[in-house]
Image (cartoon, rainbow, N blue to C red; front, side, top):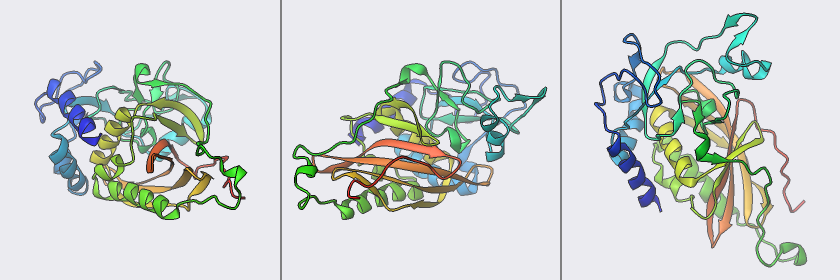
Amino acid sequence: METRLRDRIREQNRLHQRPERALPSHDTVGNAISADVALLVRDNISRVSIGYGRVRRHFGAPTHHYLVAPRSRADYWHGYWDGYADGYHAGRHYWHGSRFVVTFYYGYYWSDPYWCAFYYPGYYPAIYHYWGWSPGWVYPSRAYYVPVEYVYVPTTAYRYYPSTYHVDEAAARAATDDIRRAWFESEISALAYHLTDRVDIRVYFDGEYEYTTTTEDYYAMTVDAMATTHTVALDLDRPIWLSTHEFFVAGRHVFYDPLDKRQTVYVSYRLRNLGGEWYIVAVGSSLEPIRHKYRDFRR
Protein backbone atom coordinates (compact mmCIF):
# COMPACT_ATOMS: atom_id res chain seq x y z
CA MET A 1 0.00 0.00 0.00
CA GLU A 2 2.77 2.44 0.84
CA THR A 3 4.31 1.90 -2.58
CA ARG A 4 1.05 3.01 -4.16
CA LEU A 5 0.80 6.06 -1.88
CA ARG A 6 4.40 7.03 -2.58
CA ASP A 7 3.99 6.59 -6.33
CA ARG A 8 0.84 8.70 -6.24
CA ILE A 9 2.71 11.64 -4.70
CA ARG A 10 5.54 11.30 -7.19
CA GLU A 11 3.08 11.28 -10.08
CA GLN A 12 1.19 14.32 -8.79
CA ASN A 13 4.43 16.27 -8.49
CA ARG A 14 5.66 15.14 -11.89
CA LEU A 15 2.51 16.58 -13.47
CA HIS A 16 3.06 19.96 -11.78
CA GLN A 17 6.79 20.45 -12.18
CA ARG A 18 8.04 23.99 -11.79
CA PRO A 19 11.52 25.47 -11.30
CA GLU A 20 12.16 24.61 -7.67
CA ARG A 21 14.02 27.77 -6.71
CA ALA A 22 12.19 30.28 -8.92
CA LEU A 23 9.58 32.49 -7.28
CA PRO A 24 6.27 32.07 -9.16
CA SER A 25 4.00 35.02 -9.90
CA HIS A 26 0.98 33.18 -8.46
CA ASP A 27 0.65 30.26 -6.10
CA THR A 28 -1.16 27.00 -6.81
CA VAL A 29 -4.59 28.40 -5.98
CA GLY A 30 -4.07 31.73 -7.74
CA ASN A 31 -2.90 34.12 -5.02
CA ALA A 32 -0.67 36.81 -6.53
CA ILE A 33 2.87 36.75 -5.15
CA SER A 34 4.77 40.01 -4.90
CA ALA A 35 8.49 40.20 -5.61
CA ASP A 36 9.34 41.01 -1.98
CA VAL A 37 7.99 37.69 -0.67
CA ALA A 38 10.65 35.14 0.23
CA LEU A 39 10.78 31.64 -1.21
CA LEU A 40 11.39 29.14 1.58
CA VAL A 41 14.09 26.67 0.52
CA ARG A 42 14.14 23.95 3.16
CA ASP A 43 17.51 22.47 2.32
CA ASN A 44 19.10 25.82 3.25
CA ILE A 45 17.69 25.60 6.79
CA SER A 46 20.09 23.70 9.03
CA ARG A 47 17.66 22.11 11.49
CA VAL A 48 14.82 21.35 9.07
CA SER A 49 17.01 20.27 6.15
CA ILE A 50 17.95 16.99 7.85
CA GLY A 51 14.39 15.65 7.75
CA TYR A 52 13.59 17.39 4.48
CA GLY A 53 16.54 15.67 2.84
CA ARG A 54 15.22 12.28 3.91
CA VAL A 55 11.73 13.04 2.61
CA ARG A 56 13.06 14.40 -0.65
CA ARG A 57 15.12 11.27 -1.33
CA HIS A 58 11.91 9.25 -1.37
CA PHE A 59 9.48 11.69 -3.02
CA GLY A 60 11.57 14.16 -4.99
CA ALA A 61 11.16 17.91 -4.66
CA PRO A 62 7.63 19.19 -3.91
CA THR A 63 6.19 21.33 -6.69
CA HIS A 64 2.91 22.83 -5.41
CA HIS A 65 3.61 26.44 -4.41
CA TYR A 66 1.49 28.13 -1.74
CA LEU A 67 1.63 31.57 -0.19
CA VAL A 68 1.78 30.96 3.55
CA ALA A 69 1.87 33.33 6.52
CA PRO A 70 3.36 31.13 9.26
CA ARG A 71 1.18 31.10 12.34
CA SER A 72 2.29 31.06 15.94
CA ARG A 73 0.46 30.04 19.08
CA ALA A 74 -0.30 33.69 19.88
CA ASP A 75 -2.19 34.10 16.61
CA TYR A 76 -4.84 31.65 17.77
CA TRP A 77 -5.43 33.46 21.04
CA HIS A 78 -6.04 36.64 19.04
CA GLY A 79 -8.66 35.00 16.88
CA TYR A 80 -10.11 31.54 17.16
CA TRP A 81 -10.56 31.54 20.91
CA ASP A 82 -12.02 35.06 20.95
CA GLY A 83 -14.64 34.05 18.40
CA TYR A 84 -14.20 36.65 15.67
CA ALA A 85 -13.39 36.09 12.03
CA ASP A 86 -10.86 37.19 9.43
CA GLY A 87 -8.27 38.46 11.89
CA TYR A 88 -10.18 41.62 12.77
CA HIS A 89 -10.99 42.79 16.28
CA ALA A 90 -11.99 46.32 17.26
CA GLY A 91 -10.88 47.60 13.86
CA ARG A 92 -7.39 46.12 14.14
CA HIS A 93 -6.07 43.47 11.76
CA TYR A 94 -3.76 40.87 13.28
CA TRP A 95 -0.96 39.88 10.94
CA HIS A 96 1.11 36.75 11.23
CA GLY A 97 4.51 38.10 10.31
CA SER A 98 6.48 37.67 7.12
CA ARG A 99 4.89 35.70 4.30
CA PHE A 100 6.69 32.92 2.48
CA VAL A 101 6.15 30.85 -0.61
CA VAL A 102 6.45 27.21 0.45
CA THR A 103 6.32 24.13 -1.79
CA PHE A 104 4.27 21.12 -0.71
CA TYR A 105 3.62 17.58 -1.92
CA TYR A 106 -0.12 17.71 -1.33
CA GLY A 107 -1.88 19.55 -4.13
CA TYR A 108 -5.30 20.18 -2.61
CA TYR A 109 -4.61 22.82 0.01
CA TRP A 110 -6.25 26.21 -0.07
CA SER A 111 -3.85 28.88 1.12
CA ASP A 112 -5.19 31.59 3.39
CA PRO A 113 -2.23 33.86 4.14
CA TYR A 114 -4.01 36.25 6.47
CA TRP A 115 -6.02 34.35 9.02
CA CYS A 116 -5.94 30.99 10.75
CA ALA A 117 -9.20 30.50 12.62
CA PHE A 118 -11.92 28.07 11.52
CA TYR A 119 -13.96 30.64 9.62
CA TYR A 120 -13.12 29.98 5.97
CA PRO A 121 -16.56 29.32 4.43
CA GLY A 122 -16.94 26.00 2.65
CA TYR A 123 -13.45 24.68 3.43
CA TYR A 124 -12.08 22.26 5.99
CA PRO A 125 -9.02 23.02 8.13
CA ALA A 126 -5.96 21.07 7.05
CA ILE A 127 -4.94 18.19 9.29
CA TYR A 128 -1.83 20.09 10.44
CA HIS A 129 -3.62 23.42 10.73
CA TYR A 130 -2.31 23.92 14.28
CA TRP A 131 1.29 23.26 13.27
CA GLY A 132 1.27 26.73 11.70
CA TRP A 133 3.49 25.93 8.69
CA SER A 134 1.06 24.59 6.14
CA PRO A 135 -1.80 26.18 4.21
CA GLY A 136 -4.72 26.31 6.58
CA TRP A 137 -7.39 24.65 4.46
CA VAL A 138 -8.20 21.78 2.11
CA TYR A 139 -10.71 21.63 -0.71
CA PRO A 140 -14.22 20.59 0.36
CA SER A 141 -14.13 17.77 -2.19
CA ARG A 142 -11.31 16.12 -0.24
CA ALA A 143 -13.32 15.57 2.94
CA TYR A 144 -16.74 14.52 4.16
CA TYR A 145 -18.68 14.85 7.39
CA VAL A 146 -19.90 11.80 9.34
CA PRO A 147 -20.23 12.77 13.01
CA VAL A 148 -21.37 9.35 14.24
CA GLU A 149 -18.47 7.23 15.48
CA TYR A 150 -18.38 3.64 16.69
CA VAL A 151 -16.04 1.44 18.66
CA TYR A 152 -14.95 -1.69 16.85
CA VAL A 153 -15.34 -4.96 18.75
CA PRO A 154 -14.44 -8.47 17.57
CA THR A 155 -17.11 -10.78 16.21
CA THR A 156 -17.24 -12.68 19.49
CA ALA A 157 -18.03 -9.81 21.80
CA TYR A 158 -15.86 -9.76 24.91
CA ARG A 159 -18.76 -8.81 27.14
CA TYR A 160 -20.13 -12.35 26.88
CA TYR A 161 -16.81 -13.81 28.02
CA PRO A 162 -15.58 -11.52 30.79
CA SER A 163 -12.87 -13.90 31.93
CA THR A 164 -11.22 -14.33 28.53
CA TYR A 165 -10.78 -10.85 27.05
CA HIS A 166 -7.22 -9.79 26.38
CA VAL A 167 -5.64 -6.53 25.25
CA ASP A 168 -2.35 -6.65 23.40
CA GLU A 169 -0.26 -4.09 25.27
CA ALA A 170 2.89 -5.11 23.40
CA ALA A 171 1.28 -4.51 20.00
CA ALA A 172 -0.05 -1.13 21.11
CA ARG A 173 3.40 -0.14 22.37
CA ALA A 174 5.00 -1.26 19.10
CA ALA A 175 2.48 0.72 17.03
CA THR A 176 2.96 3.93 19.01
CA ASP A 177 6.74 3.45 18.86
CA ASP A 178 6.44 3.28 15.06
CA ILE A 179 4.53 6.57 15.02
CA ARG A 180 7.13 8.23 17.24
CA ARG A 181 10.01 6.89 15.15
CA ALA A 182 8.40 8.15 11.94
CA TRP A 183 8.29 11.71 13.29
CA PHE A 184 11.74 11.71 14.86
CA GLU A 185 13.38 10.34 11.73
CA SER A 186 11.11 12.07 9.15
CA GLU A 187 10.59 8.59 7.76
CA ILE A 188 6.92 8.09 6.99
CA SER A 189 7.20 4.40 6.14
CA ALA A 190 7.11 3.50 9.85
CA LEU A 191 3.80 5.34 10.17
CA ALA A 192 2.49 4.17 6.79
CA TYR A 193 2.70 0.59 8.02
CA HIS A 194 -0.32 1.53 10.17
CA LEU A 195 -2.45 2.92 7.33
CA THR A 196 -5.09 1.06 5.35
CA ASP A 197 -7.61 1.79 2.62
CA ARG A 198 -10.21 -0.22 4.51
CA VAL A 199 -10.97 2.71 6.84
CA ASP A 200 -10.78 6.47 6.20
CA ILE A 201 -9.20 8.83 8.75
CA ARG A 202 -11.39 10.83 11.14
CA VAL A 203 -9.94 14.25 12.01
CA TYR A 204 -10.46 16.01 15.34
CA PHE A 205 -9.57 19.48 16.61
CA ASP A 206 -9.68 20.31 20.33
CA GLY A 207 -11.30 16.95 20.98
CA GLU A 208 -14.18 17.60 18.60
CA TYR A 209 -14.78 15.75 15.34
CA GLU A 210 -14.32 17.97 12.28
CA TYR A 211 -14.35 15.76 9.16
CA THR A 212 -13.16 12.52 7.57
CA THR A 213 -10.60 12.21 4.79
CA THR A 214 -8.91 9.45 2.84
CA THR A 215 -5.77 7.62 3.89
CA GLU A 216 -4.11 8.97 0.75
CA ASP A 217 -4.72 12.60 1.74
CA TYR A 218 -3.62 11.98 5.33
CA TYR A 219 -0.43 10.39 4.05
CA ALA A 220 0.44 13.30 1.73
CA MET A 221 -0.23 15.98 4.35
CA THR A 222 1.87 14.07 6.86
CA VAL A 223 4.74 13.96 4.37
CA ASP A 224 4.48 17.76 4.14
CA ALA A 225 4.53 18.17 7.92
CA MET A 226 7.58 15.93 8.25
CA ALA A 227 9.37 17.87 5.51
CA THR A 228 8.72 21.25 7.14
CA THR A 229 9.34 20.63 10.86
CA HIS A 230 11.91 18.94 13.07
CA THR A 231 10.42 16.84 15.87
CA VAL A 232 12.30 16.81 19.18
CA ALA A 233 9.69 15.23 21.48
CA LEU A 234 6.57 13.13 21.09
CA ASP A 235 5.36 12.07 24.52
CA LEU A 236 2.31 9.80 24.37
CA ASP A 237 0.31 8.69 27.40
CA ARG A 238 -0.63 5.12 28.17
CA PRO A 239 -3.27 3.83 25.73
CA ILE A 240 -6.94 3.87 26.67
CA TRP A 241 -8.52 0.61 25.49
CA LEU A 242 -11.93 1.20 23.92
CA SER A 243 -12.32 -2.53 23.17
CA THR A 244 -9.97 -5.47 22.77
CA HIS A 245 -9.43 -4.32 19.17
CA GLU A 246 -9.20 -0.55 19.51
CA PHE A 247 -7.24 1.96 21.60
CA PHE A 248 -6.80 5.73 21.91
CA VAL A 249 -3.61 7.54 22.86
CA ALA A 250 -2.89 11.25 23.34
CA GLY A 251 0.15 13.32 24.19
CA ARG A 252 2.44 16.23 23.39
CA HIS A 253 4.31 16.84 20.13
CA VAL A 254 7.23 19.32 20.23
CA PHE A 255 9.02 20.48 17.09
CA TYR A 256 11.10 23.27 15.59
CA ASP A 257 9.74 25.18 12.61
CA PRO A 258 11.78 26.65 9.72
CA LEU A 259 12.30 29.88 11.68
CA ASP A 260 13.92 27.73 14.41
CA LYS A 261 11.10 28.43 16.85
CA ARG A 262 10.15 25.69 19.28
CA GLN A 263 6.45 24.86 18.94
CA THR A 264 4.16 22.57 20.92
CA VAL A 265 0.91 20.95 19.85
CA TYR A 266 -1.10 18.24 21.54
CA VAL A 267 -2.00 15.22 19.46
CA SER A 268 -4.05 12.05 19.56
CA TYR A 269 -4.20 8.80 17.60
CA ARG A 270 -6.82 6.09 17.56
CA LEU A 271 -5.83 2.66 16.25
CA ARG A 272 -7.90 -0.38 15.35
CA ASN A 273 -6.93 -4.04 14.93
CA LEU A 274 -8.07 -5.32 11.54
CA GLY A 275 -6.96 -8.79 10.54
CA GLY A 276 -4.21 -8.85 13.13
CA GLU A 277 -2.61 -5.49 12.20
CA TRP A 278 -3.06 -2.13 13.93
CA TYR A 279 -4.21 0.79 11.76
CA ILE A 280 -4.72 4.51 12.42
CA VAL A 281 -8.41 5.38 12.11
CA ALA A 282 -8.48 8.83 13.74
CA VAL A 283 -6.09 11.68 14.50
CA GLY A 284 -6.48 14.85 16.52
CA SER A 285 -4.65 18.03 17.50
CA SER A 286 -5.08 20.93 19.88
CA LEU A 287 -3.17 23.84 21.37
CA GLU A 288 -4.01 22.55 24.84
CA PRO A 289 -3.92 19.04 26.31
CA ILE A 290 -6.65 17.10 24.53
CA ARG A 291 -9.89 16.57 26.39
CA HIS A 292 -11.79 13.48 25.38
CA LYS A 293 -14.69 11.29 26.46
CA TYR A 294 -13.01 7.89 26.21
CA ARG A 295 -12.84 5.40 29.09
CA ASP A 296 -11.10 2.06 29.31
CA PHE A 297 -13.71 -0.63 28.65
CA ARG A 298 -12.25 -2.86 31.39
CA ARG A 299 -13.22 -0.47 34.15
